Image (cartoon, rainbow, N blue to C red):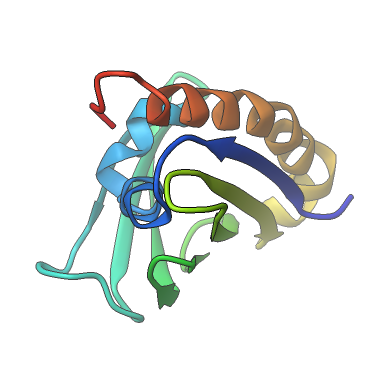
Length: 150
């Protein structure tokens, strides 16, 4: 099974969409299982910045560390997992569809280390493939909110 890739179109300008979808502190608003996210480095994000994400998995909170590998606003953002038995590689692309509309495409894949090498192909990729459509629907709903509170 390959990476999970999903796209949605939203009624917001690309720069606004990019700022929201790549801010780890907003992940809790649209990604299943996320309870906290933040960049360790203050100021504007840059390649090499460290991202910490806490997810609720199996009734417990688990924190993972990733590194920002691509930062090209308002078009592309990517991270790679650095620790734990299951490490995510995530790529976000934002495409302007005029001045007030955008397409967001997110690709998620995983590498396994230790026990994770067994879990990635048997469980993790399938779980991500099930969650991605709901996450993208939640993202579209949030960004298309009429009050502009994305």
